[in-house]
Length: 332
Length: 256
Image (cartoon, rainbow over all chains, first blue to last red; front, side):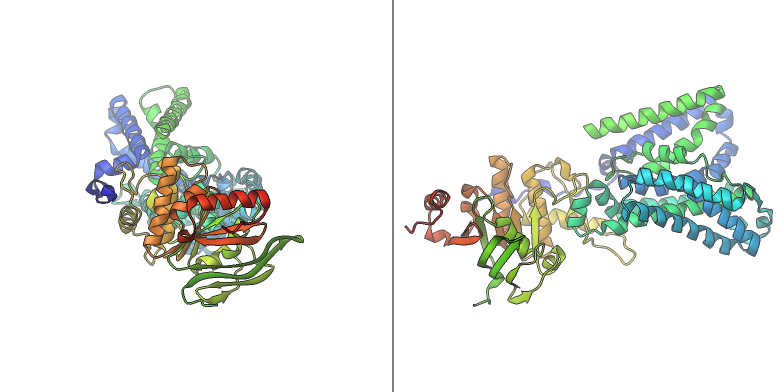
């Protein structure tokens, strides 16, 4: 007779903060790093960090890179990469500006812009999943392709969008809540919460983790691998479109290089958030905190009175230390 | 043929690959609540039989019946929907994900928006492992990653997964290969669990010592044919080993 069959010790389903922390060591690590950094800012530059102005500035500039990083987290979790999203953002932005110039309607331009992003994302996805080009190679190609397309379409010229300010939708997108909080940050936070929920608790998020972990196991378990991967690329495209909408609304101007410069900060936010480049493991919450860190680092360093040319050094140090901590935590 | 108690039957199955006959007229019935061991040398046709049963291969000639019904399967999915699950040692689970996620992968408990009932999945997975599979280790919870499990425990989770989704027949391909003695014992215990729950299993294993303790019936394959079938009460372990040795040396089964 197996006496261990009745073992009450295996039963307890504990809940609470301590268990949640034990389950997600990387989420704990990233939170501590963020708190240390903001503590450092507060001590280093209290005159700046005890006032709301700096936070308002973060809130109005973070969401563009942030939305891209949220989308990229799914792709990195697949064990793949997308280098073309800044260019997709550029194409979507051109469509937004052009449709707005023609129709004067923000909702129509909004839909056209998101739709364009999704189509570009779907084309990336087809190239990778159907034709079988490795994602890094495929998106180096489409990075140039989409940017080249914007340059040709826009003929190198910008498009002013000042008339957007007359619309109610302008206030919905980038107005100031209670006259203080930039609306794009409110939207960004809502979308981030939705993405965090999807990543860990939705069937889609779970399938992305399985595909990134082991494609052939996932297939054996009846997960539709092809559909899951395509959805990730289409979602990345939608996020690029959304990011373009907010950025163009904030500055009320389209220029052909829209999106340039977001690639590395967005990917840095994903990696600093603890998502593994090998796939199958990651954290959307980590990406969210990573966005706050990456988005505030430069301003934070400058405000503390450190000379400007130290920023990259500290930037690099933070990222390197963070990813080293994760590697050690994971080895354990 | 009486099919009332039969779960899966093969009738005169032939299988050829590029004119090489791998299976030459296999007649085999697996009954409900029975553990059948397929034994035989490499190349005897063990894995080809499995692939015919699970729809991976379509037989050149012959018929497959599941629960008395003639089926014409074209994919693994076809056999799975009829309650036949295969557990492969290497491809059964995703290593970096939690046990509960693995148990429910592809068949999640979800609401209409696609959000999973994580709490219920955790609880059901815990109950499944504890009560049906006899997992008692304190170190293993449903939140443990599969990577932290031993080879035998992984097999256990994979079997639990199949049982949970009401598989009637679980096919285990070399489940003890590369495992230590202690781990092998665990896997064999899991196999006994399958029978205790009234389900059937097919075991493919080279090691007769392993299969003898759990199987009810032994089907000996030789070069694409069934060379002999014995139930456990017809034959002792030593006799079974003698038969296998004779078969290997002389190419035929001596009648004892």
